[in-house]
Length: 175
Image (cartoon, rainbow, N blue to C red; front, top):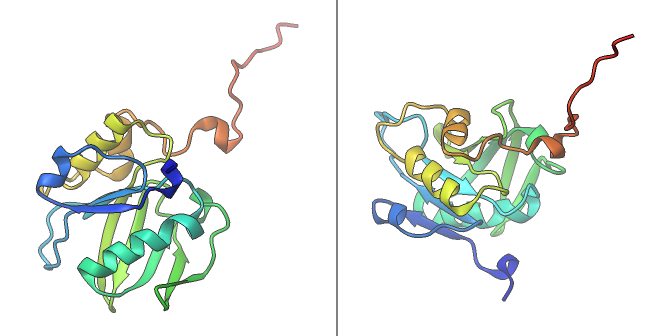
């Protein structure tokens, strides 16, 4: 069985932080009260930037714990071919493009119940992903997603080479 064939998993706290994580894992702190103190409600480590492949397993798992997911907010620049909706488990899930950054995904259940998840970049190492996930799900976390990724060694959400940026040293003409 290849890694791509391995089922996606969702772990709920508190013991989940102690387990090894691998791409395709979501780690969630599902606080559904209006007094949520932390910035993030969980973390997700997709295997790729193909939202059509990655999102169905996450939505299916979240639906088991949260009820039907009706909307997902993503940054269009962070994903390959972002559709406006997907049919997942015979339900239509609307996909909205927001400038939330490639480090965050917004999950909406019902009319107003919003959950914010840190997105671990697919290229992250297991140790960095585990550290970022553990920090994201702390109830007292007030660190933004982007800073968590930097602090835990995942660096940028997308490697610079993927963004088409110049990777070599810049040289100035001396003439």
